[in-house]
Length: 84
Image (cartoon, rainbow, N blue to C red; front, side, top):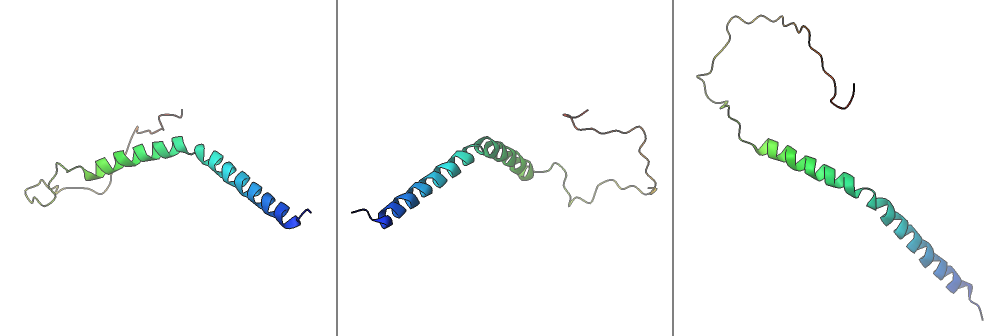
């Protein structure tokens, strides 16, 4: 005697396995990106943990008395290294 409940349960398990395998397959594509992100984050944290050569609490620093507020940049350009 054929029971529809068992057929339904088998289909549920099958669809669950297909969904799980599909999700794992798509997450494998993210591994190189996560490796790049981990490398980038470690270099950022190394930069943030670095001790500065400038002592901000030192009061014997040089001050500019005659500073004008007009600053002009001439012949300055910027572009990204990968783009023209």
